[in-house]
Length: 224
Image (cartoon, rainbow, N blue to C red; front, side, top):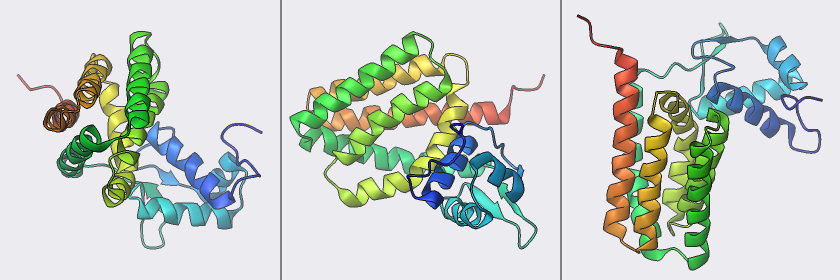
């Protein structure tokens, strides 16, 4: 069994969704690609019924879209959609960082610092995008869980699949991984200082910088 196949001890639908979600995030399944059920069954070693259930879940998350009986494809993130995601992300992650800095337990603060340190170390040694995405996700999982607002946590979680797709694209831009790690470290510094205002500002700056890189890449180089 390969790592692209379903682990039989876990709920099949959720496992299939996880496999396909990961493939979309790292662009093994590319934006706009038509998803053929037979190929997805082969990829995951799951039944057509399980694949269809997983696709419905991914559609609800905005990662795939159905074409009225003409199949399902990977959602293409337009520049406008990316801009909207970044606008929402900036506000919500800024609030989460502020609440975390002001109210998180000592244990959560230590866990966040450890996760951010791991991200910085992975970045410094030139780890690939998959490793950086996992390290960054671990840091944000701690931040969101520890912010003390379960509604905010849940809302941010529903946004993360789209955010991770955009994050994979921005980290591919030259120099972005290093700058991103520095920006997240600034959030951790504010958290250690228990400075909610500074944590919020650092988190929003981080998102705004990611948006700037993403939108500049989407628009392409200026014409001469």
